[in-house]
Image 1 (cartoon, rainbow, N blue to C red):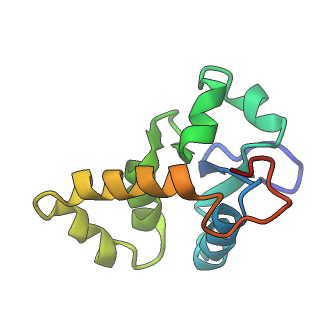
Image 2: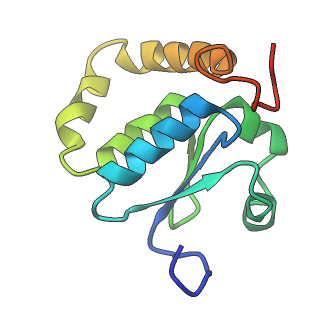
Length: 131
């Protein structure tokens, strides 16, 4: 977000589960990798999410990451991660892998497994959800 506190209409917004330590660590790594400042990272627990994206169902944010482009295009899950990697410096060197046969369906399957199990993969007592 620009210094005046208003959303930047030229950046993609990545909404992630800020209550999950693994997701927050990934967001931190993305912030460090994003030297071109092409992403705005926003925790799904931030009240601004519901104000800025009222048409996205609330449960969508708990099911998977959401990436919203400057033009309003939305990606979620593995498709969002593919797009995020593509936006990063030299990320296109990695995203060609998604063009391999079965890569996208396998990536989505892995992502869905990760999303369902993320709280067991590194969250502690601070998580709002603890299985």
